[in-house]
Length: 229
Ligand code: 5RP
Image (tube, rainbow, N blue to C red; front, side, top):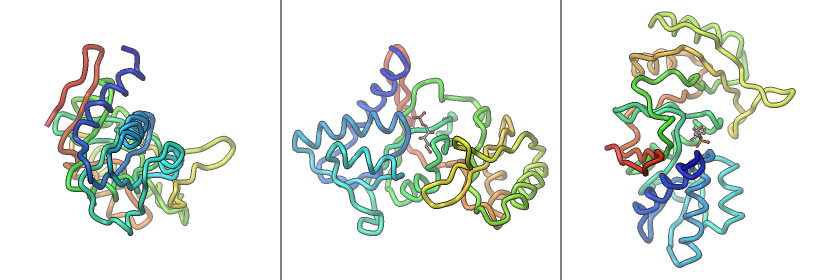
């Protein structure tokens, strides 16, 4: 199985959790997009669901493939969110935001009764942090916010490069109009403590640590998919 086939496998297993009439949160990224393609086939076969997309990118794909969408304001309580991740630890804590959609992803997951993460096995780690942590910041005063992030992290003995994410010649801007700092702290032994430190900084809008939000992870490898709960 190549990387894409593993993503498809994880998405197929996730689809078996989707029931007729469900209100779904629909994630962002290449793995979530495989899920959207499979979901669209089921919808064309008669499955009735309504979805809330976690990004403009996902919304475009859903519209293109005929997956019915509503806004989170129209449908503020969801049954299930299915989304990818950049890292998954054994307690199902996650790093997300590699695709830049972490704020909407977290809002949608928090509005859902359950979150299922789908990933290939390269995303499974013992301790979060090899993947640079995306931190969404308000563009106002971002130099000051970046200094504050460095100081906050150093209280936990976390240091490393903080890079403002760029896209082409410009700065990457999220669907919410914010910027992203990718923080290469390395191993994050206490994700809760880092989360609290980051939220104490006014310019930090959100961060990519998803702590105790996922209830199931479907991890696909060359031999097939396994489910972690
Ligand atoms: C987007 C995300 C994605 O879920 C994450 O980056 C994983 O993406 P992919 O499935 O393409 O590896 O958090 O903000």
